[in-house]
Amino acid sequence: MADTKQVDAEKDVRPEEAPSAEVEAPRASLGSYRNPYVQCVMLGFVCFMCPGLWNAVNGLGGAGQVSCDLWLPVAWLLNISTGTIHNKIGSKATLVIGTLGYPLYISSYLASNLHARIMLPYAPGIDNFSIAAGAVLGVCAGLLWTAQGSLMLAYPTESEKGRFIGIFWIVFNLGGVIGSAIAFGQNFNSTTNSVSNGTYIAFVVLTCSGAIFALLLVNPNNMYRTDGTKVAPVRHPTWTAEISGLGLALWTDPMIILLFPLFLASNWFYTWQFNDYNGVLFTIRTRSLNGMIYWASQMFGSIMIGAVLDWPRLSRRVRAAIGWVWLLVFVMVTHGWAYHYQKGYTRESLAEPSFTRIDFSTSGYAGYIWLYIFLDFVSDSMWQTAAYWFMGAMSNDPAKLAYFTGFYKSMQSAGAAGIWRADAVLLPFMNIFASTWALLGAGLICAAPVLWLRIKNHTELEDEAL
Image (spheres, rainbow, N blue to C red):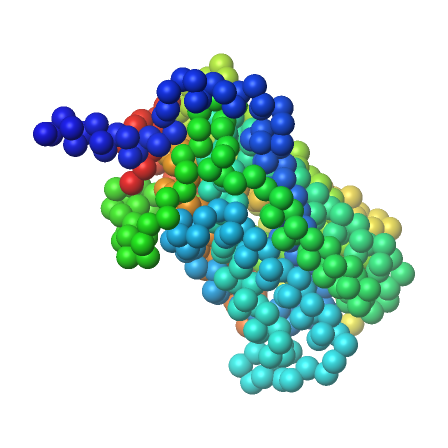
């Protein structure tokens, strides 16, 4: 009886295992639309049109407004763990719903420009529409990124995960590049230091197309990996089972908790980079240009770290260690460089009449933009690619990965909300910078035991599902 139960359990854990004829048949059609690489690119285009363009707007500092205090991160405050919802309704439905909040939220910026704001005592400068749109986006963003992370980590084989993450990151960040290019062209001759209405209108139209790309994706239950193995179908259990499964994911894999500081840091750095560096030092057209270069450099950073993490001549544990060391070196070097600039200005010094914003035509601009490029390499593309790879090395099961990515986005959102609020209450620039540097270092230190003890050269059967 015990042996029978063991066999049944293994069948439940590995639903992708099937007779060889059923596995081999789809391999002949891997060049078709169902190819996992094609679907990864399509997934990238969904995020290109929604969070990619949203990144372009927010990368201007304060969402392109004159004051960075005008943007309260309501969206991140409500971006909670959504793995439970994902496993109940499925990846495709979760992704489609997740796209809908982005055009709504960007339209709130347009509405704020077109109409007088209803001033709220607890959030000066933000009207009711902006707060409501931010709340909706918070839920939608959590859904979108949970579905995205689950699919991106479930489709590749174990030797391809870094490559798939890199491909996705390239396509996704094209949204930021093109969005910033639009902002640069629209605001090239602007003297108001805020984004024009035409820019916001263009972004609203483009983000609406994200749902169309999501609808065109193949049902994940019909997907096969490049080695012919079937992607484990997402289960649709009861809500009670899913809620208990969230706790079970922590209980059965508690070392994921050690990655929480690394998750917390993964959007923390945006506040200093976007608001307290790009947002306060540069003219609006230069901020747009900086954003275009920033998102373009992400594509190279993700390819670099992805290649290291998928290096075929080395074992997976060795690759994880090399990736960790690489991140540590980049964090220390780039933030040491950033400290050199940060110690030269404060909130008070920027308010002095003698302060002049830096334009791309200003002498010395090259040093500032090179720092921005290298900060992007380590703090965003490399950091987030590595975070996804670490999670992907712990399991191949979409349901379990949905929980992991849900934890990731929740911690990421909580950190982003906290530090954006600290910036809104005018915490000194140096304090925000120091917290960014310290949290990145702490995240790597806490992650080290996970890489050493939890990541194996091959994902074992018991790691496939809860």
